[in-house]
Length: 150
Image (cartoon, rainbow, N blue to C red):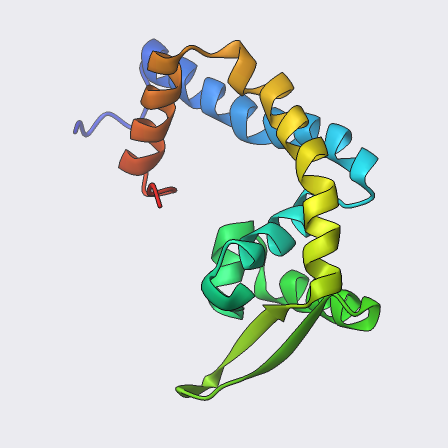
């Protein structure tokens, strides 16, 4: 650490690269993801629940996994409930929390969208990196506290 308030050239380059990464990659995946009829956020919400035990997840954890604000998630969950894709109920172990459960219809939607999502992620990210690059990406995200392997 330094007391210098300015970023060095390598620090500026790193920050600019990260900024581009977090702004452009999701936008590119989003554009390809739309072919499934779901936005990237909607897909992340549904797939997050689909990977949880019993197809059920706390809304707070789902907000973290999908990168959405609680209000945005709540609005999406309401739309999904209206479509019959998920149900919400109070957590019996903690009445302050809400559980979201994917219905059979919701599971069918996410399963239909998954190949489109995987293709987009491969095209935009995975196929452009080798195994060392992918490992470095996981390591860096972990150090920044933004992701931990499941």
